Image 1: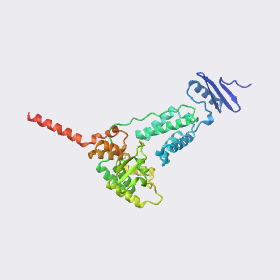
Image 2 (image 1 turned 45 degrees about the vertical axis):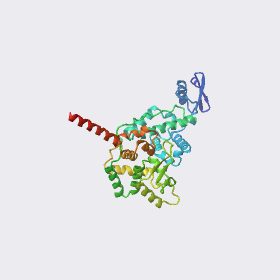
Image 3 (image 1 turned 30 degrees about the vertical axis):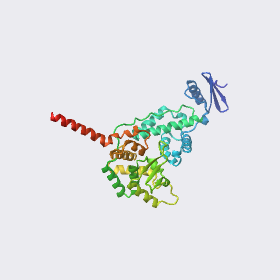
Length: 349
């Protein structure tokens, strides 16, 4: 005599069929074991599982990540030219969760552990932590919408972005950075850092820049693939023009990308090495993106009007540029002059 199966579960060969009524709607699933079927039936009744998907259809984390990246690359012009940009993020996610783990096991407890790992052990910046959290959620959502995840996609909490000090490179710090690149024979990386400082481009904007986007005659550079999907044009400084002329002369016939000779991961490694050796190893804000802050502060400090700076930097709105407004000298000079005048009048009395 066989044991009676729990209500809503029937056996079909070596599989177990789950069929339960939830708020007038029938939910079904097929599982590989009785234990799994009992758990799935309970989750269906509680509404924890939204989809009646067979266990065999659930993707592993590795499969889900691969499918998600393929989808992003195929449907996003901004990333299609450089799918390798996802490699590092994928490595972080796959190493923590394991490529063979079922997506159904990626729950809130594991995701909270991932958040703590990124913050406490890796000590990553808020932007890196939050982007990894976004990619993790989008990967789950992509699988769920295509019937390859039975549990509800879970968001990772966000790391609070600081609105404190805007870290930028001082003139003296720039000299130290460039001197290190020269003394270690890494001038090509120094040229890229100088390019970042004088153009204000985002890291990926420069690495995706093509020779077709550079006009040496007019001294203009057009950035077509931007974060805001709004192309913009910047004028070359003398230093940038010399760098680009040199790269143009050295390029091979098949070279399309201006900085094709600098792999992104190697750029990170060299930057970290430089940062440690010149004494900024403990400065978490001493990052490549700091070059963009440096450009913006120097433009405003030179008296360029804020709307022109907004267009140069490719900021989506004026509020983003106003974060740097305290670098505009004229306002502070006027305020100091006003105080001096009031003090003079007061002393005469």
